[in-house]
Length: 203
Image 1 (cartoon, one colour):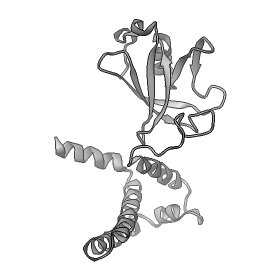
Image 2 (cartoon, rainbow, N blue to C red):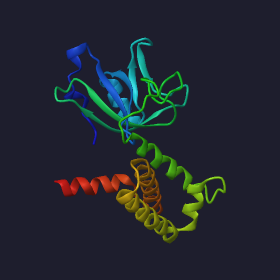
Image 3 (cartoon, rainbow, N blue to C red):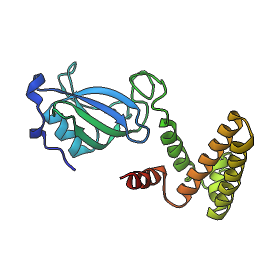
């Protein structure tokens, strides 16, 4: 859905509003920039996050020279309509220092790595049985083999939960979750679909 620039209170701060960019898959905060009405329109028209550069005094599309663009997913205003939350998918490091975020490579939200892992699994799915990638080999083996692995890991997780240490339970749960994510990918699904179903049940 397109956000109408006329509904944003640009005048409150002299024509610019802060735009917080969040990684769509992981929830990590990537950077803070500023947009005017022109930058907001350009972002939505091009599908690439574009700011008003206060130092260059012009529109600036993130990655226009480095190639490390931010592909727009969505934009939402805050309750006062004088700040924007931009969800995007980065094509590379967001920061000019080479880090994922302009706030450094500090871990994002606790579950943020699952988003990164999902992207890695998707990338491996295009590796076509690459002998160096366990994920690629597993995906090449087919859905039945992957489902069997999920079953095995489920039993091992249950046993660890019943009689083994916290560390062993954590390790087995990680194995189960990883193989479940591979199975979902093999079926053209992701954890997003699972999360949406949980949200639906909660409602």
